[in-house]
Length: 212
Figure 1 (spheres, rainbow, N blue to C red):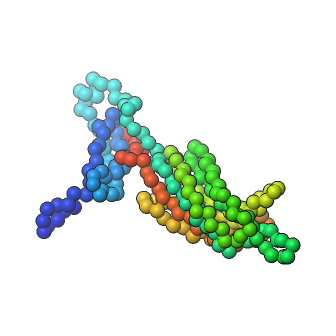
Figure 2 (figure 1 turned 135 degrees about the vertical axis):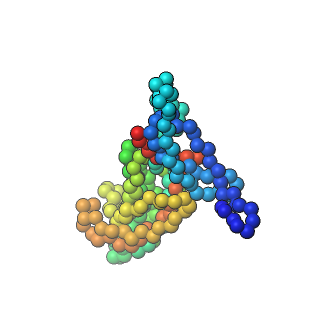
Figure 3 (figure 1 turned 180 degrees about the vertical axis):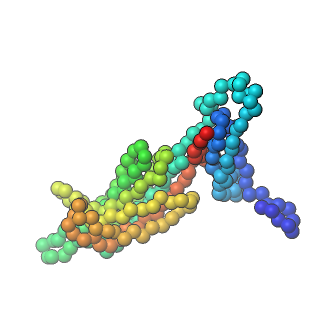
């Protein structure tokens, strides 16, 4: 950080591997150092002299890391729900549900699923569970959160919400308004589900793309 009044402040450092291909490479490097945060986008272009180009056959180095854009861990915390639809009715006419949370994470090459424990006879469950998805995807992953009522036969769909992948590090809380999906259940969805997401990218750097 440039400081006119005194010494410049150190914000972080990173090492750039030498490119082993001709053309332009775009890298994202995470800053290293004590209390360093954030990342820097760098464009590197290697153009050998004509005599060098004639002397060598340039090819990608097998040891050069080529990591898809979304590579890391997504930490999901299932916190609780409130105001859910009553899918069951007891002999006294009182409604309740046995809700659990189901999460589906879809990348360009796989589909990952996880579900929470079931909380019996409540419309305001508290799950307080955590799950980590380890992913490596060249496209932005899609995250679907659903709430179901557990039954002896087929579980009843209570509602769903599509959640955007976090675009920065740190824990982000979400209070999801559950929406109806008539293909899964004819009844209207009710209530909310509370979760938090934390994206932990793989460090120290990610290969974004390359072009000649």
